[in-house]
Structures are given as structure tokens and as C-alpha cells.
Image (cartoon, rainbow, N blue to C red; front, top):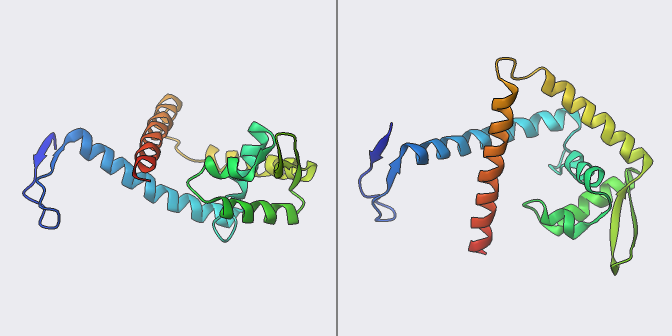
Length: 167
């Protein structure tokens, strides 16, 4: 539908106008949300995501790619609280996957880094993720997949900005 005009919304009293692009973005957002829940369920079954929802793999990936970080820095990269990331850091530390080290820039805020065991576990999880990904999207072209990832990234950045403006 190229352009659709809807009547007055009874709950808000507004007269929304939705064009094809707006409808496409809304549809994409809803598909991404549905995909997220399916990914989370698969992640929990494969160990990429902890049973309580924390992203152990994503947490370790940040450390593997960026090096040691503070818990607040990790939380800032995600739409979650510092407390939730602290819980995940503590859980991973208890498993010997990460360790807390002194932070030369801040006395009280320790840095979190992968241990050797954590780096090895991250490598295993990454290989598992790639193995799963290699069996998906057979009919899709790599360039289209990369373009889609960029579009989702841009929309995610826009959502983050709008969310920050509402805070």
C-alpha cells in the first residue's frame, strides 16, 4: 500500500498518516522483534544466552573485540541496567570465564576481562553460532544480508536516540 490515510484514532484523537515507507519500517520492526524472540529461544537452547536471559555470548564478545571494559561501559552498550550486567559479570566470573582486574583510570570501578577459559569458551560459542548461521538463509544473497544488517543497525541507532530523548 503506497499511501494510506486512516481516520481519527479514538484513543489519541490524532489523525495518523501512514505512507509506504512508514508501513515498511513498522513491519520491519515487528519482524525484527519476532526474530529476536526466536533467536533468544534458540540461544537459550544452545547456551549462547543464559537461562535468565542474560547474553553471556554478547558480553564475552564485547570483551573479545574491545578488550577489558568496566561493567558500566558494557551496560551502556546495551539497553539494560548496570545491575543486570553486574549480575552477568559475577555469574561469568563464578564460572571462571571473566575476571576483575584493577582499572588504572578508576580506583573503584574494576575492569572485566576474559580469562583463558573465557576466551576459549567464547571461541566455542562463536564457532557454534557460525555453524548455526551457515545453515540458514540458503536463498539469500550475502550482499542483501549485509545491507539488511546495516538497515537494522541504523534503525536501532534511531530507536536508541529517540529513547534517550524521552529520558
